[in-house]
Image (cartoon, rainbow, N blue to C red; front, side, top):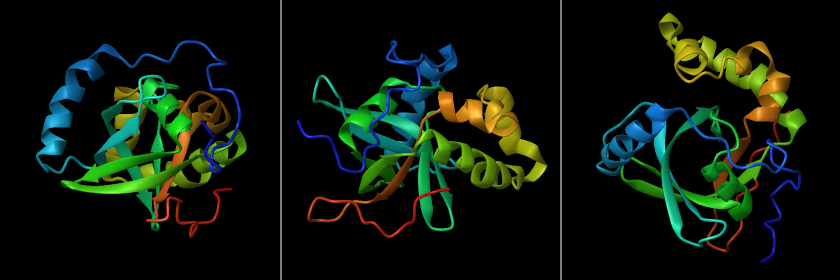
Length: 181
């Protein structure tokens, strides 16, 4: 199988080890979130990401937060190089479902340098603008990803980031957005 042209060919953040495992509460929350999101219930920035499994070939759907800023969109593997991130890296494309509207997207994984710039210059100011410090609390305390704010370089090494772009009918991503960084 040919690798997508948009994919950056570098080793997984974990150096080829087994996928990262999210905290236990994620396995309890995800089935509930998946049902609510499928029903069209808005849940903040959360959406359903459906990606073809890299070994099974079966579609896998998981709730993720889609970061939308100035017309550009990203998904962050908050819990590290998890299975959905590995699947997205291999497939290079997915379907994002928000409010029962499905959209085919191309996914380009940011390089470590681009991800560091993204965490420092895009994500940190965006999350800091969320009232009452809720963004920093959610990512930093509840989800355990404080390094995204305190150490963007370490975050770039441990938390893959994918930019999402609409997938055209001819089978390629729309290349309207410039690369981050």
